[in-house]
Image 1 (cartoon, helix red, strand yellow):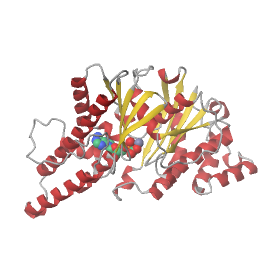
Image 2 (tube, helix red, strand yellow):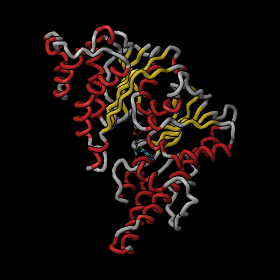
Image 3 (cartoon, helix red, strand yellow):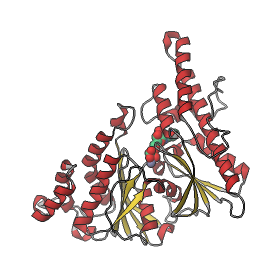
Length: 401
Ligand code: KG4
Ligand code: ZN
């Protein structure tokens, strides 16, 4: 079975082609492309939805062609494309791409260059329909609908967060997946979400904790901005903080660890960001030329990462305590952009190892931590036997797991 996966929920335009014979157990990645818009959004210090939509519309066809070329598909550029679709087809597509007229043009020019033989081997199209930025989601959804119309391939709507849950399972260097014993606990830490999810089996999810305000990735991005680092800030904070805290131990900068003792499984990161803001303002006033020395910035980055890590560990261990009993958690699945953070990763692995060495903690490879289409295809593979296309597919910006 070959599945084409499309992801446009935020600021990455991503398409992958996966092959799977035995469900999630064996997955081959035949092609994978991610076009990031991060540099463009950097000037706004965050993702700007109208710009994200425009960029997706511009990039999605080239990203598809790139992915299919990697998979060995024939792209026949000699074809007289503009006349390949009938008037009826063109009218249908024009209506579909009513809000993305530039994509209509690129679509009718380039989609016919994918020759019949190769395209007929795609069995289904998985597309992220939420959660995410609504205008951005619609580009992927309308593109999937257009392919469904011209190729006759069914569409599987995918929840982006379910993709992040499955992302640690893929072993890109081998044809067989990492085995995750169930039940599992998922810790989702991304730019838009911070959630703890109980996973009795794949496809069944129960949210048991979440942030009450900012997501942890959002806090990384905002703190980075306060320190004068570019968007997205997570990797820059991580680099500045370094991993080895024994070298140049940080001066006694202490930041709050919000809700660490709240007694529940929820999070809050906006107070931490505000604490950094006040600290930066105070230290800038005291600094020569009102400019923070690099070592001070490094200390703040470390204190911030330390606080976040401690809170995440505390809540994960609390969840393990609470779910104990008859059927305790056997695996922790960590997903989302922040799971690329090495300090958080080491901290979580060590803490869980100490708590119970039999629990395995799985992280995605760095490529699969941040947004990508492979993880969306994995959800499609999980769902494909169950979900024939049916009903109207639309964006659901706030889709809960
Ligand atoms: O999952 P993702 O790519 O997009 C969303 O679905 O939100 O996550 C993006 C977030 C950004 O906030 C980014 O700063 C953060 O992940 N991030 C990191 C690291 N790499 C990316 N945060 C901390 N450390 C990192 N190494
Ligand atoms: Zn994401």
